[in-house]
Amino acid sequence: MENVKVAFLGFGNVGTGAYKIINQNNDEIKRSEAVRLEVSKILVRDINKKRALDVGDSVLTDKIEEIVNDPEISIVAEFIGGVDPAKDYVLSCLKSKKSVVTANKELIAKHGQELQKVAMDNGVGLYYEASVAGGIPVIKILLESLQANRIKGIMGIINGTTNYILTKMSEEGRDFEDVLAEAQRLGIAEPDPTSDIEGFDAVYKLSILSSIAFHKRVNVDCIYREGITKITVDDINYGKELGFVLKLLAIAKKQDNTIEVRVHPTFIPQDHPLAAVRSSFNAIFLKGDAVGDIMLYGRGAGDLPTGSAVVSDIISACHRKSNHKYVNFFNDEQDSKDANYNNDWESEFFIRLTVKDKPGVLAKIAGSFGKYGVSIASVIQKDRGKESAPLIFVTHAAKELSLKKAISDIKNQDDVLKVENIICVEH
Ligand code: HSE
Image (tube, rainbow, N blue to C red):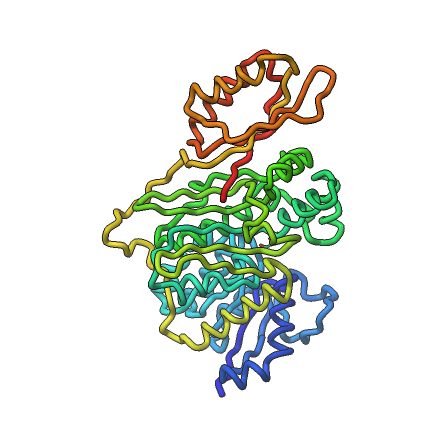
């Protein structure tokens, strides 16, 4: 039986979850995996702080050197989050020939390639299953179960906070701000919710997933991003009348050498499998050329679900010893080294306008769509007010740039009081 000494960097929610799992399931892990995990050091900012879990005073340290320079520690799990100082600490551990397991999506999305190179040079592993979709083992599935496929597409709900907010807005008719405040009280949303509600969190995760899936480093800056802060209950309700559910989707498609990557609110049909993913759950659709469609569903956050992914990576690192698995980014001989990004994607669009309620307005707006080759699939007008009326259009598939031109034309019409929202529709 191999005894493996592990160190933790940070001891917040996920670190505590991983610690609990190791404690609770160590006998089971010993029996099935033939390794005994021992958390021998935990780096914390304040060793005197009172903690919910008693790990023993000798385990806590506030000096990274005590971990980096300890030759008995072979695996380090990083839970600090963000880039500074996590990146420096991870680099020091890799250079000291320790495999690193991390839940840090920003670090991997921005610096994963550099860190992997250092890991390779030092013959150790870099594992980051927990960085995407918490407990859902999507990275292992991409790396170890779908290698035979060319992955053509990813479509997922990979941010639980926004899915919780959109679900509540849709099911209870409550405003964004109201539900966000509730999510913060419940600890579902962070005190500073920007990364989640503005789509940054999903962008980091999509960068990691699409880089692995497409064997191309998909830079965070190449991903189109739009959060959910402009979504209103009116948008959601009008969408419902048209048979749609609203989700913040992360979408990646690859055709030949062209990659399309985007995170934005999206209407999907009510009978789409992702439409049934409610509350803070995550789900990811993968499309492989051989396997077809696969959908993974589960908890995208939380101490034990994310801890489950971390401990699984620790066990993988134990087994692989010096034979770690790395991602090849440029291994497709038919492709050039650089990917092309498609910034003029095709989608159907939902457009909600407030217009003057008088004859001829609809015809003029339809004319602007026609002028730029945007075909209208349906239109509804509801709740006629005194002088204004909401007009909702759904287009057939149209290019994003053509749609933008049509909208800019429509905005200039005197009878159009406001372009309230434009939301992609996917099937
Ligand atoms: N904040 C993330 C979410 C979980 O809401 O899904 C951690 O990645």
